[in-house]
Image (cartoon, rainbow, N blue to C red; front, side):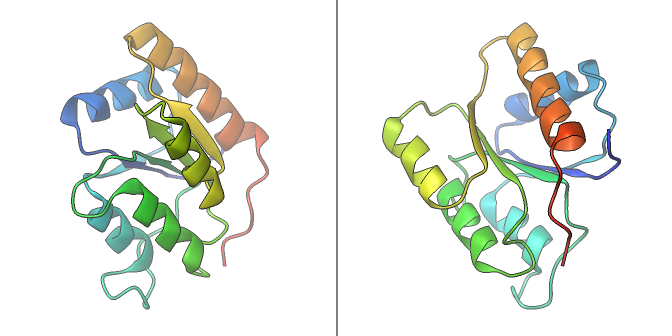
Length: 144
């Protein structure tokens, strides 16, 4: 797998730990940077003033919808509105199965929408497949 970083945007500590454990169990060795709310994610990706750029761009963003400060919809909207992050692969990793959430995420430019598996075995399998696709098979856009 490519050595790029994964940005995990997740406010629930239990879900964060489950995701990190599932990634390790799936033998996805990529470094994971965690953001615990939407504002933290945007600050990381775009910089605090939104004009200077932020930290290292990840290979893929795993983005929850229900986040404090700035929700996942707005994070996705802002990611797609900046030239630095416009082409960044974003996978919505959420517990919401609401059809309107799925439609809105795709309308805002999400690359994928995955409902969080309930149990650990299913999480390992889902994250293994996500890692295989987004970090090995998918040809990412060049970073600007």
